[in-house]
Length: 259
Image 1 (cartoon, rainbow, N blue to C red):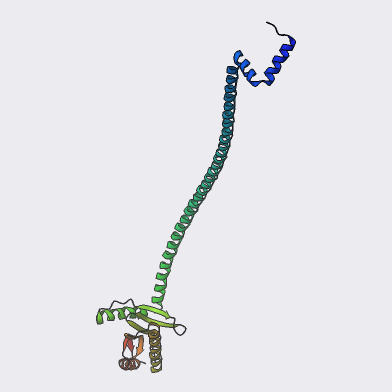
Image 2: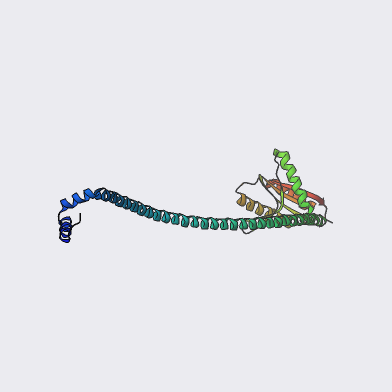
């Protein structure tokens, strides 16, 4: 059955304007199911698009995170490289320090050897000077020191290292021929006293030394010593009397008669 042009126009107009009629026609033609399928397809496509878009966004975020991680890794490698360079520098410095320390130790060893050599030479020089001193008569002072040491040992079991030719930093400087700080021993030694006047001068010198030693040590003198290597008989007798009065231990090496 064919439709006339007017009938076709009316039918098209009815499909366009009458929704109920249009739906009925679509139902007869099975278009409803196709439209539903299309709608589902559209929804599925939209869902897929959204999913892809979400994945794309997440991928961008992941790429950004990966980029940050790579940048962090790069910084870590740079820092690690810097630390290794610092460690290498410290190791090089340590090696230089070890070399320097080795060189210093070698120099110290050389200095000790030089010092030992100098001490050996000084010992030889001291021995030579002692021999010269004894040859010139200076040995009487050391003889006096040995006598004083023996006296202290005998009197009270005192073991004192009696010193010879000591300079005390008191009232400027005061030289003392015989000195022991504990107990305080002060002595003067001379080679020859030829007169009473010289004897008095030597006694005054001993008293001056005694006062200086007491001031220096803050102690009272335990023993005063006057040693004379050579003296005429009259001088010896005078000194014996004065030594008894002033509590002086007198040592006279040789007494002789004047001619």
